[in-house]
Length: 185
Image (tube, rainbow, N blue to C red; front, side, top):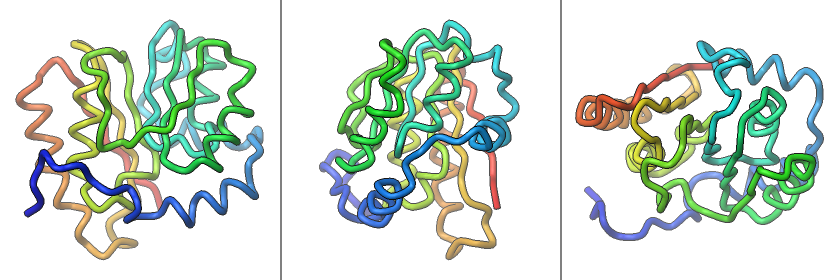
């Protein structure tokens, strides 16, 4: 087992592959809103209004974009690929309270700052998904929500299930955080 205090390289996982894709397919399309709403269920558009949000693994910013249109007060969108961050900055430039930052999902320094923290389609690509989910959850303030959307089990090598106990243990240790999980195919 890896030392839980040692820095984690972000080179493992998929930043190169996704950076390339998001650099070429960088537009935000109307149909992306329907995708976002399915992936972020059971949250409704009104649940985002006035909230400070964190998008862990933001890619081109499309999953940050929709909560901002629903009235989120501010957003921090983080990723580890400069190409995707460049696209995210462009896509989110219409929202003055949206910040896009090069930052690892493993090392979120903010603690208890966000109303909603989410990661859609990212954690199952990481080497240590349990550490990423724990970091994401620690950034949520009391009464906040954590949403992690991951690929369905049958499409994975089977190992992604191992991080769920860590996330549930965090949730049990910090009952002020409501953890929401979703699967997509």
